[in-house]
View (cartoon, rainbow, N blue to C red):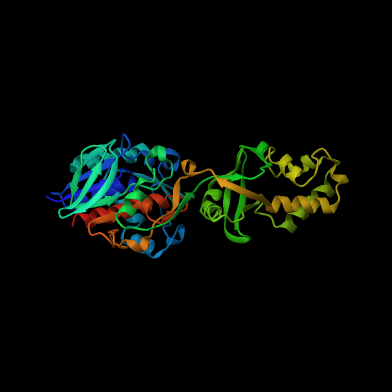
Length: 407
């Protein structure tokens, strides 16, 4: 009887186990998970609603050392296969734009259906057991754990990265992969808030505003994104910041100068905004500068923008020279924030970096170094942007690995 051991009970690990057990009903499939229950990280996804996948599935939504593996994986298991898989479990889904969620809007629904399928298939789930080593032998692999050791014909490494260790991803999977001869690209936090050096906008903490953000590393524009920016007590957050954060983190790791340019008014050009100001000045009575801006920006943000532009909110608009207005326009359209650090792995949704993707087969996730060893999910140097892409990567790589391991 074939024995398949899946190390890690997260998204990719659970699906790998299900795929293996469905492919070979006689196989004995195990999941070894160091936390007290399976799927803890799934429960935290999508703000507890679980953004399963995205109908707009494209390799351009992913980052990593190579997109060839992403294209291969998505060609074999895309969003449609994901929806079919979850439909087979009895899950009904709904869409918000292209984002797919369980109809219940509860991540717990997804975890419940996955764990029930594991039970139905007879998968053995060992929780609160930590894997400390993998040793190849003539019979396959001996898996050393904090409990009893296991013998396996095939091993699937699905331990996750090191983002949010409280949910089970503590980076131990990287060491297991390296012990089997694999190599890493450096790992940094991704989809993570940013800490600003000499931050002057702390009083605007809690403000959410539409903005365009641009990552600048060593003087070079790397990437930009537009969406709802969140001002915090320490710096910048929100989806557009998450989308650019991997470039910031990589720059910080390389000890390069890193900053984020924020356009607080992306729907206006500088000329259009200047024209708007001058028109309001012409048409308005003798009002304060702060009042002039109150119709366009969040009231907590206005004083901070004025302070940065060296304008006093109580001053009359009639007293402001054009040069001062131009400085305000420059600030509103391109305030520069020097980044001190990310908020670290504990606040990151995923990691950037990991096992080099050229070291696994792009259609099976099997190691190119060790027959019978598979590496999935966040352990690989692939991460997606926000929007269900990281879960899609987890489901897809887990499914391909589990199916091949059981053949």
